[in-house]
Image (cartoon, rainbow, N blue to C red; front, side):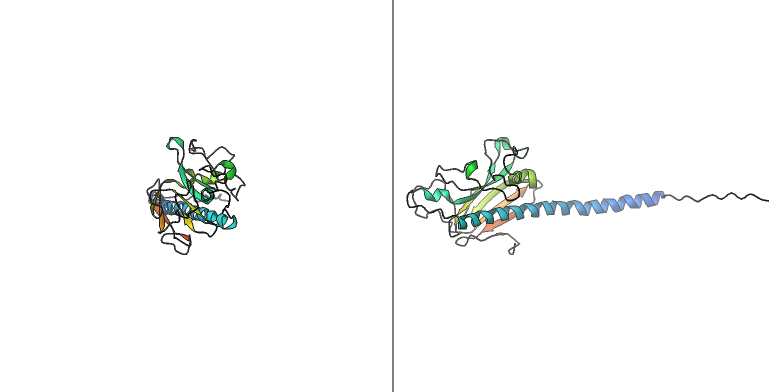
Length: 221
């Protein structure tokens, strides 16, 4: 009786197949990386637009007119983008200077609905680590989205903040107001241009009178 030995055939990748797999993976990576960049850019634009609209909403809900203090325009709800100390990035702040001192303190900042922490930071402090756990880490837009600069043009030329009154109208240069003459009303369209570390850009426009804000190129945003 003959003994038969069965051997299983083992197959592997040929060199050509390996090369093809590497090429395909490279193509996928080259397509995926720009998409990741676009998503980060869009996410940053969406969040900043949301912050501006939140500021206007707070102004509409909080009547800041005062009959007893001539400096009451200082307390308009304000959205601002400021630089952290030592060039460690940018952060967003939202608040109302309710004591009319010319700046917004931590207790005057609104709370982030996502974590219940103040949307506040001091430009005297570095922010490379994203705050100190007592403020919202969502405000550090360089760390979160790679945004490295902001430039205001039009109605907000050379400034990095905007405020709103109880009618939702946009104001600029009101932080040092000493009389309620509404001279700080923005009279032309404001455009904030944001530049990312990878040099991509997006713009947010804010219209005078209505204060309507939108991402440029995405008017329905």
